[in-house]
Image 1 (cartoon, rainbow, N blue to C red):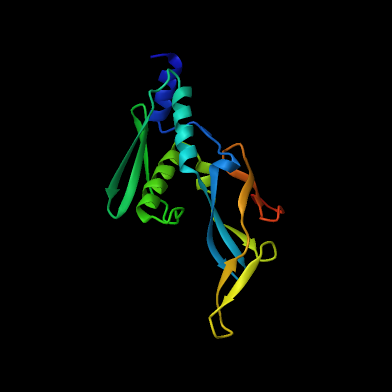
Image 2 (cartoon, helix red, strand yellow):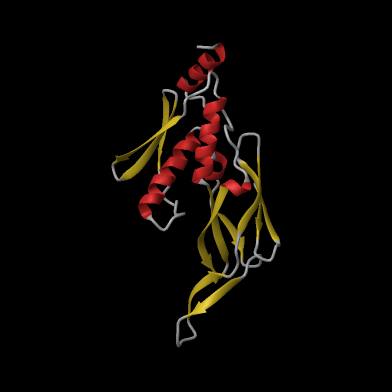
Length: 194
């Protein structure tokens, strides 16, 4: 085993994951609408599962001595689905974040969410996964009240806009520093970490 591979293994055994194994680009991040009300919209950013898989493969190639790949194992502990991601013989695992709802299929959400959380334990997509939901005020997006049929009562609010992540930047520790969210009309909403 080479010196650099031995050093990597010792750091992993001490649970010292290298920082920023992969910082995701804007097109590697999914934007989810969590809630719409009269005051605005709450969004959450999630790493794209396929992008995280590609970064894991790339990380294996970059590791000292080269790795033949990574392994993924799902298991249930209590009421939660966990995922374990192993690089070489070192494994990191995590449960699905409770708010992960990207697919309309609940089992897919659990499997993908736990996979993303385990990959984040390796610092792949961790900055995006750890970013809390963000609030965009109604003054910056188009929100339409929908009335209950036959009444003047507002039943719910609907976001009448398409939001996509346009740009993302990171701090030195891998946390998200700023975002640009593009609206359907081309205008941009910016957010910076406080």
